[in-house]
Length: 187
Image (cartoon, rainbow, N blue to C red; front, top):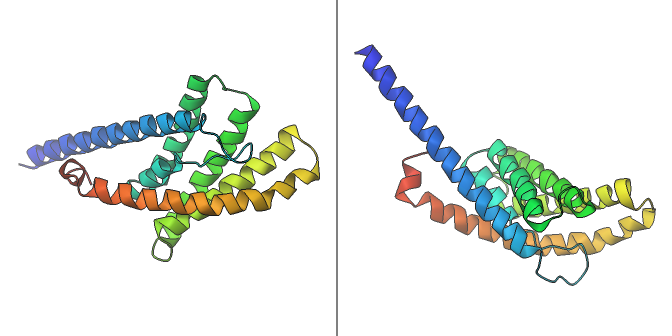
C-alpha cells in the first residue's frame, strides 16, 4: 500500500513539474514576442521602452516564484535579442541589466511585501529598478559622463507610468490565469 501511494505521489509530482515548465515556456514565448514587437514601437525619447514584457515577468513571480520570474526575464531578453539581431550589442546589455534588476526587485518585493503592495506597486518598483540599472549600465559600459544621470528624472517619470500600466496588466493576467481549470489543477 505504501509503495503504491509513493508511486502515485511521484507521478503527480512529475506531472506538476511538466505543467509548470510548460506554463513557464509559454510565458517566455509570449514575453519574447512582446519584447520583439515592442522594439519597433516608437517612443517619445530614445532608450525609453514601455516594458510590456514585464507583465509576464510579474505574472510568473505571482503564479510561481522568484526564480520563475527571473527565468522569464532572462530568457525573453536572450530570445528577443537573437530574433532582433542585437545579441551582445549595447542595447542587449542595457536591456538585460534592466530586465534582471526589475525581476530581482519585483521578486523580492513580492516575497516580502505582497501584503503591503499590490502588483501595481511591485511593478512600479520593478520599473524604477530597471531604469536605474539601465542608466548605471550605460554609464559604466558606454558613456562615462555623469551627465547621463540627468536622464533619470525622465526615465523614472516614464517608469512610474509604465509600471502602473504593467502592474494593472499583471493583475488582470494573473486573475484570469488563476480562474483557468487547467491552472487550478497544477497549483
